[in-house]
Amino acid sequence: MLTVILAIVIVILLTIGIVWLIDKFVPQNLKPILHIILWAAIAFLGYSTFMSVYGEIQFNKLKDKRYAVVIDKLIDIRDSEMAYKQVNGKFTDNFDALVKFIDTAHYTITQRRDSTIIDAEATKRFGGVTMTKEIILIDTLGIVPVKDSLFGTDTRYKTMMNVPVGKKGAKFTLKAGMLDNIPVFEASVDKAIILDGEDKNLIAKEKQVVSVDGVNGPKLMVGSMDEVKTNGNWPKNYSTKE
Image 1 (cartoon, rainbow, N blue to C red):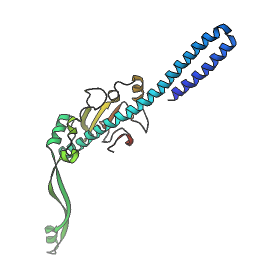
Image 2 (image 1 turned 30 degrees about the vertical axis):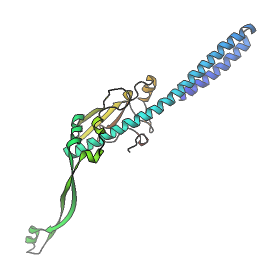
Image 3 (image 1 turned 90 degrees about the horizontal axis):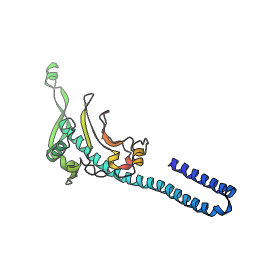
Image 4 (image 1 turned 180 degrees about the horizontal axis):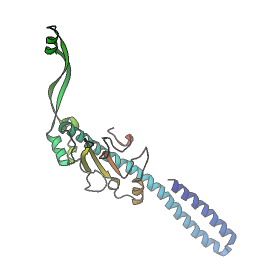
C-alpha cells in the first residue's frame, strides 16, 4: 500500500511539472493538443492507480473469506487426527484411514476415583495393626462413537481432504510421523491453490507475509513436522471455530 501511495505522489508531481513545462516552453498553437494528450494520460494514470488500490482491497476481502473456509476444514482435520491419536497412540497420513476411523471408532468413557483399601503387607509388618493405602480406580462407564462426538449427524468429515475453495480438485497435504519419539502431524495447502485465479503478483506478495495479523508463510497449515504442536499458523480472527 505504501508503494501505491508513493506512486500517486510521483504522478501528481510529474503532472504539475509537465503543466509548467508546457506553459513555459510550448508554442501557443500546440498547447490545446498537448493539453488533450496530457489529460488523457492523467485520466489513464488515475484510473490505473485507483484500480491497483481497489484491486488489492478486493483481493484482501476475498482472501479473508477463502482463508476462513479453509481454516475450518483444517480444524476438522486437526480434531480428527487428535481423536485418532487418542485411540491409536499415533497420527495418520492417510485420509481414507482417517475417514474410516471416524466412521467406525469409539471412545471409551472412563471415570477415575480414589479409594482406600487395607494394605495387607503393611498390616502384617505392624503386627496385625490394620494399615490402609490409597489407590486410584478407573471405571468404564461406556463407549461413544467418535463420529457423534466430533461431528454429530454432519458428514462433512468425508470430504475434509478436499480444499473447498480456489483451484478445483485440490486436496490438502497430510503428513504424520515421529519427532523425538513424539507423534506429530501436519495438514497444509499452498496459498496459491487457495487464491487460484487471482492476481499472481498479489498472490506472490501474500506468500511472503510476516505479520501478527496475517497468515505467515507460503501456506495455510495446522500441526508441524518440525516441532511438537497441533495449532495452526493463522491468527484467531480468521476462524469461526476458535
